[in-house]
Amino acid sequence: MSSVRVIYCAGEQGRVVLDILRADGDVNDVVFIDDKKELHGKSFDGVHVIGSLDELSETESAECIVAFGDSRGCRLQLASAVERLGLEFFSAVHPDTTISDDAWLGRGITVNAQTYVGPMADLGNHVLVDSCVNISHDVSLGKGVTVTPNASLAGGVSIERDAYIGPGATIIEDVTIGERAVVGAGAVVTDDVPGETTVVGTPAAPIND
Picture 1 (cartoon, rainbow, N blue to C red):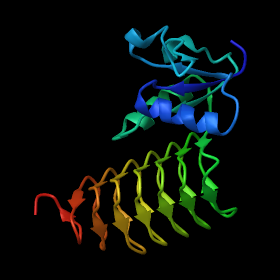
Picture 2 (cartoon, one colour; picture 1 turned 135 degrees about the vertical axis):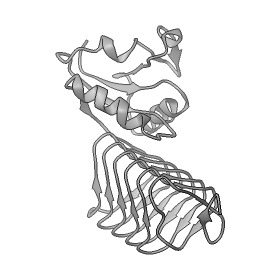
Picture 3 (tube, rainbow, N blue to C red; picture 1 turned 30 degrees about the horizontal axis):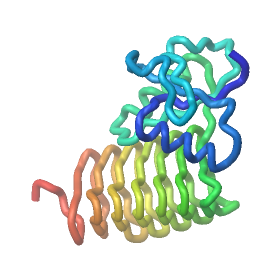
Picture 4 (cartoon, rainbow, N blue to C red; picture 1 turned 90 degrees about the vertical axis):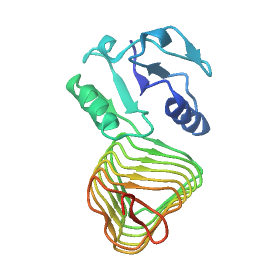
């Protein structure tokens, strides 16, 4: 196989990534891979599912992005499998975004349309930021974090590894969201959230309180 861009997972998020790449230019060098054998040989929006990850050898010139929506560890696990094959990662950033020149973007990230990323923001590897998200200055997103549409992260917010921020959630200045925590849709977070905790409501509180 010649040099290609590989979208790992041909489901809904994979097709979102494809739309981002198409908005940014030509997709003739793009293919899907997926571990679901029933998808092999099919095409989505004109792009073929060529097989599973096992069929890509480390000698092939290919770059990969893991397009798995609600991570909860799965996106990072799949990324580790890609790394073991010696493949590099590419990122999908929609052209209709505003990203500060002083922001830092990791490998294998997805940033969808109408999102703002402010100065000194740090987006870790394999982060997924959906459309219409506001990421203010000095925000830190750990590996595998998912931020869904219309969320707003104020200055100095820290979102730790593999946490999930629900649609329309607001997190005020300097709050930390712990590893693998979940912030529910529309929640307003005013205090730190421990890891492995789900919070909802205004102001946000643990779901079992």
